[in-house]
Length: 71
Image 1 (cartoon, rainbow, N blue to C red):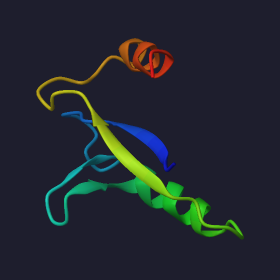
Image 2 (image 1 turned 90 degrees about the vertical axis):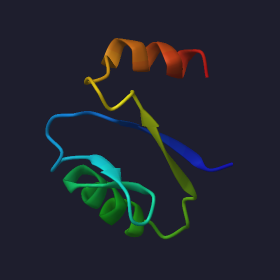
Image 3 (image 1 turned 45 degrees about the horizontal axis):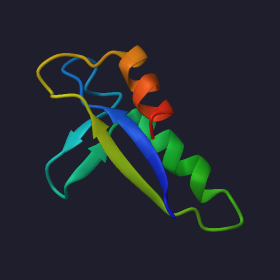
């Protein structure tokens, strides 16, 4: 089962993390750092980025934590 990574679909600080249109997914500084760290591991880590939020307002981290707890 792949590691599921919640990514805030936000309207501010797009250079840190944002939705990517081509190819569909995510991009940004935080993603680049995370991918670099994952690539240093001696074993593969399957992963899936999941956008959280509607893209019209910044999502609440409290809501995100509650959603993680609910699976």
